[in-house]
Amino acid sequence: MARRKYVVGNWKMNGVSAALADAQAIFAGAEARPAVDVALCPPFTLVGAMVAAAPAGAAVGGQDCHSAASGAFTGSVAAAMLADIGARVVIVGHSERRDGFGESDADVRAKAEAGLGAGLSVILCVGEPRDVRESGGAIDHVLAQVAGSVPDDFDPHRLAIAYEPIWAIGTGLVPTVADVAAMHGAIRGALAARFGDAAADMRILYGGSVNGENAAELLGTDDVDGALVGGASLTAAKFLPIVEAAAAL
Ligand code: 13P
Image (cartoon, rainbow, N blue to C red; front, side, top):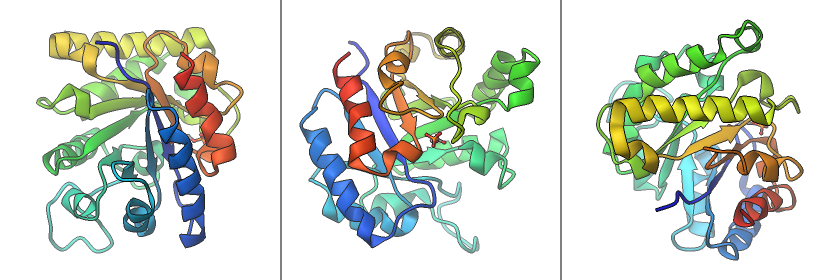
């Protein structure tokens, strides 16, 4: 069966209660495009309220989780705690966590396992910095991240990879379609080598400066099964055109 397109908003550290109206508008628009799976990942403080404000069954997620189930980890949130307040998704391994909080591939793998264990769908991020792209090492870098951070055993429908070149995040820069296709094809190949037929059920999202103008081309690229969107996910006016572009494919 063809993989359903998946468009995910990562609100990062943006939004207080007033932003729930934006989430409601986004989910209302998404309901009108049922062929596309849509999820929003607001700051942790809004997850519970967004679940309550969204239509039943809407996918709301966290942006990170701890790998442990509980314990002395001040400031952290366990995957089961996200599930407990109605989250259905968690992002792990975002470059802003790998780089800003020193998370290793092993840390990201442990978080992915925690998310899956708590019954959440996981979006596991990988991506290369600019100097690695410029030196021609992007594919090797990303495949090493995939090898090190994707768990061994999981339902392929519940783990998506998000390829987010770090230099494309929040910059307005995007790789060429050829480079996106090459990277996504390489990731699919590595997953197939490791997981066999199950790799065909795993979705590979592109992230980094996706917007209403470039979404159709990016989402129409081979092996691009959706988008992980930052800045353009904060309002319905910017996000729904991306969902529409996915629905039109
Ligand atoms: P932008 O869409 O703002 O470039 O952010 C991408 C991202 O990091 C999503 O996780």
